[in-house]
Length: 198
Image (cartoon, rainbow, N blue to C red; front, side, top):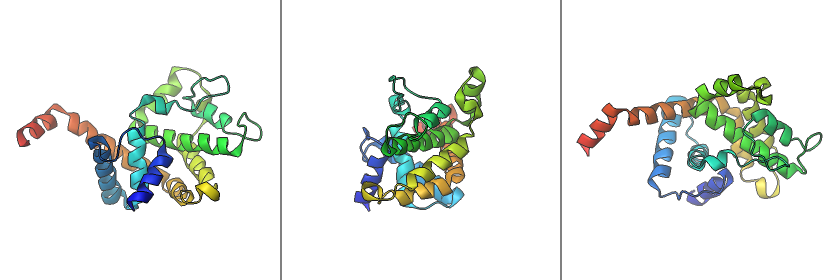
């Protein structure tokens, strides 16, 4: 099981934070508890993937790892969708489509779950292609497309992405619960209580 969890963690991206790091352990504990107790997702692969995703996105550069042909980092979901199109868009291969679609799923899951208030803030600030994009639909659809890459090196992780697509809204809600608990942990009253206990 640990070997499979590691494989799925690598699928989440290049992990800089080892599984034994306290931050990674915190995310696994929080995601696991909220997903199991509040929304009924007890699949260790989903929990591990989402916890690894939180760890990966602690590095802001990971949020901007998808770049267009000119090398510009993309932070607009609409532009990412265009970048992922191997038929009418600039994606040179289906592997590139999978890479970008996976990032769209991760990006939308992360923002919709951890920073839902920022989605409309971005849209209102300036004109963006994503102003016309439903983030939840884009995330679900992107994970679904990634799940259809089910042969060769992607065979083991395809079912995980099918689950993430099917349970996208629940995963977003679970991350929102994680966010709320992290905010409570940072509140001065909670910090003072932790200091007294420890």
